[in-house]
Image 1: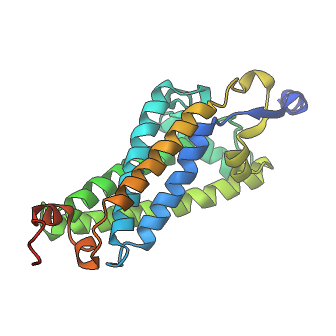
Image 2 (image 1 turned 60 degrees about the vertical axis):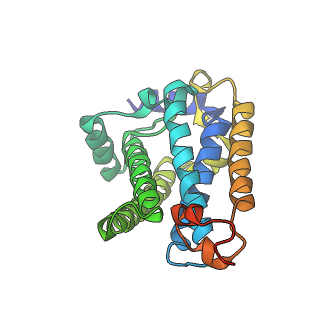
Length: 237
């Protein structure tokens, strides 16, 4: 077994694993969730909070589609595994001999699916709260889901740092460069830069529309969108 592992290690070199859309999604999600969480309690930054929340929802929708038709290591079918695979991977980590996966490992895949689900729960409950379509219970669901997501993000960061140490590879850097050590045949052929460019244009365009449609008065910014829409152009006269 050790001979096989050594032979594999000798044959490895930096290969392209993460395409541009996956990397852009990852860092835009970091920005959107982090920014939305930090502005959650501020009335002054309410519009920014809502905009970042909607951005996060759009990103999740894109990732679901890309997870079905994207590149090899971006597809859910390539990394989502059952409970046995997750338990086996975690047991190997506890022994200090983690299984090597070119793409996401089974435990990381579980965290990704959970984060996507929580992101949808956060944005859906946030939309309902912002538009005042339910009582305080929905706001409590929104806060609980956001806090749970923050906790899972923290666990994910610790796991990434631990995996980087055990595998002796910088997983954070790989999500920036897209490259990881691996066998040549395990890499992807294209980074799909055009898809990432269109994705970035869509996000920036949405932010610009949000900025342009923002009410000029601070009081209006702090109100739900439905309330603003109900006001006539001369209601303040």
